[in-house]
Every structure is written in C-alpha cells, then in structure tokens.
Image (cartoon, rainbow, N blue to C red; front, side, top):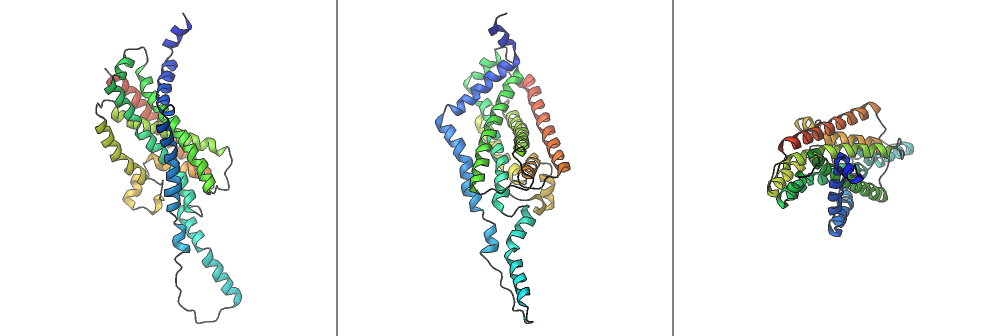
Length: 301
C-alpha cells in the first residue's frame, strides 16, 4: 500500500484536509481575516469602556442630610473614607471585582466564541448550494469528518479571536484575581474549547439539511441574543428576575463564563469549577455526538 493510499483510508487525514480547507477560506482572505480580528477589539474598546458603570457612583455623589451632632475629626475621616470606598465596594459586591470592565471583558471571551460558532452552520449550507458537498460525499471521507471539520474550524477561529480579546483587555486594564497564574490560562482555553465545540455543533445541526442560507440566518439571529443575555456574560445571574435565572442556570454560556472568571478574576472555588467543567464537557460531548450521528443519517447528496 502506498503512502497516499494509506492516507486516503485514514479518517484523520480527511478530517484535517477539510478543516484546513475551512481555515484557508479564513486566513487567505485578508478582508475576512481583518474583520474577524478587528471585531472583538471594537467590542472591547467601545462597548467595554462605554459601559463605565463605576462612573455612576463616582460622578453622581449622593447629597446627605446635615448631621446636627458634632463629630470628632477622626469620625469625619472614617466617614469620608467609607464614602470614598463605596463605589469600589458596591461594584465588588455586585460583580465580584472592583471594576466592571474586568467582569465584562472576560464575558466577551465567550461572546466571541458564540458569534464565531453561530456562522459555522452557514458553511455547510454554502457547500451544499455550490455543489462541493456532493463532491465530498462521493469520496471515502467519513461523514462525521465533514461535520467535525466545521466544528474544529469554528473552535480554532474562536480560540484565536479570544486570545486577541484577552491580550487587548490586559492592555486596557484587566485586573486579574489573587489566584491567577499563567497556568490558569490552560483552564480558560479548555473552557472555551468545550463551549465552542458544543455551540458550533448546535448551529451545524440546524443547517445540516438546509439549502437556503436565509433560513439559517433567521435561526441564528433568533438564538444569539437569548443565549447571550440569558447568561452571565454581561450581568450577574443573581440580579436577574427569578424566571430568567432559571433559564441562565441551564445556559452553557453561564458555566463557561463562570469558569473563565474564576480562573482569571476570582478566588477559585474548586467545587464550583469542577461543576462548570463537567457541565461544559457533557454539553460538548452530547451535541458533537448528535452531530456525527445525524450526519450518518441525513447528510446526503
């Protein structure tokens, strides 16, 4: 058997060939590459800094009634110190950190993964319409490899864009927590890897039988905002209405955000962190498996 014949029967060879094709459409098109890189930077620079919630407390001082009993100078100093720390303490009680930018910037990591994964299903719709899918289905490449190549393309792109966001956030003033070490980044990338696999599998499942990209776009636009805002990406779950908390508690983005924030911002709660990764691992495994199974049944010429 020649080396070429051995590669043709290796399922990993077909998976890599299709994944590399998807990535080439991204990094060999300078316009798409530029937009995909600059988009998270715009989110971080504009949205991140525009939502300056700390200024609500510092730029709008509260008028206090005049205190008639005389206070000692030490008491006045303590009172002034208490009010000067009010903004920081309120933010810390609400978001777990002293500035909203740090809270939001880590949430944007998962938001970038969500937005990148949403369009992974569009690729399979275009492949079907342009006839490329029919050509692939006539080769020995496993049908599961067709699905997983789309998934891995979304995962790789998501991780690259999330890395850019994280680097840019550090430049703009991201404040890391007391338990943060460079090794924590491995856990961060693992959480993003798992959520990217699960989300991209869902959106590919939606488009696996579709022949119209308008249908795929309609579904994507319907799901993106509920997934984003019914999570703790931009706002803590504990302050949401009770009915929305129930939705957020089953939203995988909530667990991904919690895991990344614990590893970057908060003091690590190992029990909760293990729950986060168990949920994300189950989410990724279930939906990627469903995607492969449905590809065997429904992916046809």
